[in-house]
Length: 492
Image 1 (cartoon, rainbow, N blue to C red):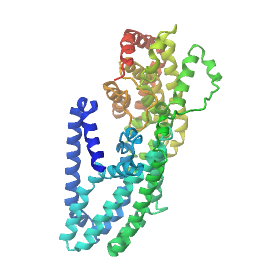
Image 2: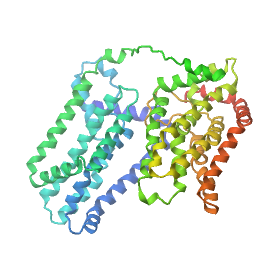
Image 3: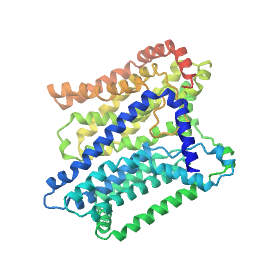
Image 4: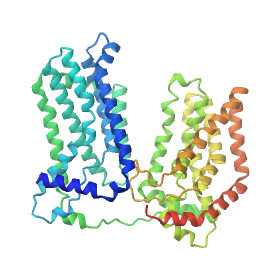
């Protein structure tokens, strides 16, 4: 039976239109895989010598075991975002006299031979050979290598559990990031030293190989959890049953105070709340707000005041960058209908502008506590907010007139590059790095206050000439209106 499954998978892969259309991409992925294999191989060969040189008075194996917590945590995050669930077209098999258990065992076994499980071996095996050469003993080296394989498989099946459960929610990646960040913080601040606990456990296994039964039991448990969870969903009716949702309404009457742009503003707010990918723009505000904590508490950045501008623009403009770069692609699903209505393009774009302005102001207000690290940071954040409102919003709207990529709002938010083109990559430079350059010139020639004043003046100038700038941008959109309608009408 397994032989037939493998034969089916092989034919399905090479006969698929994806393979025929993406040969160049597959070649690129092969080169990337070869690069990572060589990198891990070099790491495995040299790691023992590096640890021995760096920590001459300590046992390299014990030192390495102390870092395995970070390795496993990073491995889990990487798998969550990059590793696909073991997918097989099982619907045709569900109507055949086949045992569902055989199908599930094959699917789960297929995940065990994933590239993500083989990649660590290129570092683990050379390091294990170095242990043997350094007279640690064959038994110790083999037990350690087998332990690493078992832990890798545990992470593999744990990721499937997380992916399967989170697939049922509309925003799956934020709880995972929050959990990983929490574990990292608990370990980093030594509230709960997970790295020490894990290291002690692996060291005990190296000393007493019988204890390897414990991770084997854990592996069996996570495999069984996967098996039982997928078994409950392995029914024809489960595949055919339509999903139902309870309709909900939201009171947005407060938007009427914005006049003619109110209907478009309501449309954008509903878009942000009701769809997976746009909704991530709201939650990413939290990540953007915390961005300064990577730099401001670190004493090495105390005298690097030009970096404050980059952080300030990013913190107060995270929504402008994340949401604005896909204007008007967010509306691509109904763009043809929208453009057939008797609406003014300027009002449509002004609603986007107002939404980005409000986000920048709110983010500045929320970032005021950063004044704890110095009044200069607060001043730079204010200047960055004004610059975002008066300059970056117009840059992002102008770049939107060149958008030609359709976006499916129902797709997942994490690592979804749908709608991303050359425009999105190029627009990042003027948004983030140009204000730093603008600040740096007067900052070096005159002083800190001159750099801040330059950003504020440029932002204020953009606000004063709002109408003229918007008229220019509207003309760009009108010139490419039918080109965008045709582009958004394409499925690929």
